[in-house]
Length: 163
Image: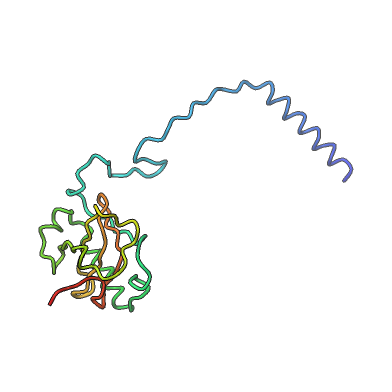
């Protein structure tokens, strides 16, 4: 019986090969994907849209070690999560018009930054702070509707907070 298996496999391969040669193969045209769409997910963001009228998306991609969520205590992590949650339905326009020590933000002068800026923060990028753990801010930069969080400044040492 075992000796018959290779012969059976060879016969099957021959049959499949003949079948494939006889079949008419249609030419398939592959269309490039539509921008901002996927097989299952469609993005609500179009690069030409005014992102000021959209809610922010928060990114932890560029967080700096020592100032990240991992450096926070459990209660601080909860406050951080709630800070993001409270802002989820506000637009960038709403956040700009809110008080800086409330849900709003403040622009931080580059000259007041006391830690090294990551390379993606080029000269044309504004640095922004939102309060997240009491008065302690999360500091980062905006790109479109995304707020890229760099630091959670729970010890008030990332920038000069004044007196």
